[in-house]
Image 1 (cartoon, rainbow, N blue to C red):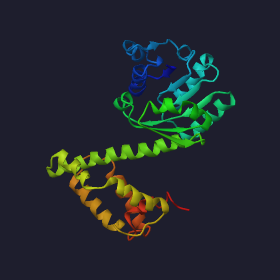
Image 2: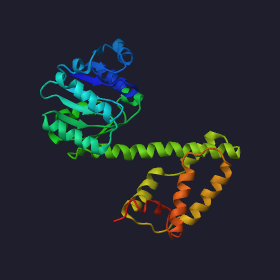
Image 3: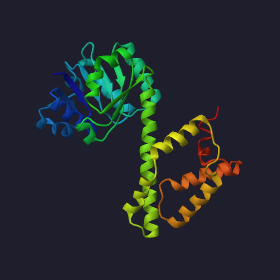
Image 4: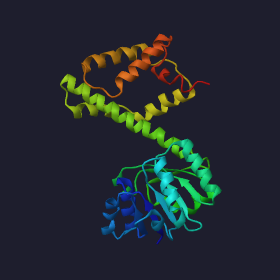
Length: 283
């Protein structure tokens, strides 16, 4: 049984704490809003009054916090309670540049640090499903790899580049959030055309989305824009979508159409629609 601390008991942090307690770990939590932490007492979880108290004697400290500023403030406040050899694991979604600075500063003071953002819902955290990306020193990762694996369905070690997991977390969130926005626009088009919303979303089942990522995404990453769906024709279709929406609020379609217009004006109308990535893959 490990003694661990979890600092930050929002939806995800609370789920991690519940799951750890069920696995038999001795868990102490702390949260800036004390009521959120107190709600975990019924799971046999200790609630500390300060972050420094929470980390006393812990072999691992897990951070599940809002942003970089809060991460830095909480680490600074907890420093006095950190035991020698403790592993500090930050699951927060943070800016890559600041993550690299934080990792270097902590290493300089002898604190063993890993950045381990996750792709999982609170329910997935309770059932140890989802994915975790981990960056940091290999020896530190190896020392806690089994414990991290128990928290999730899949652990992907990204190597010793301290900001790589932070960068990839943003890549993944870009996909998740933009896909959600695209489905919102699909529902808007369904409303405008008198189609049931579920029927609109079901259209996605017609596509091999993994295959599209592999073929189109792979080509884009290589800077290959050989036409299979010309940009000018794609823009025509976007025009139809915008006309159908009829002034209803849209999340992403107008922005994509505007980007297409700029590329067509620059002479890329006959290129594949994946030319949208032209500036991102410029060599």
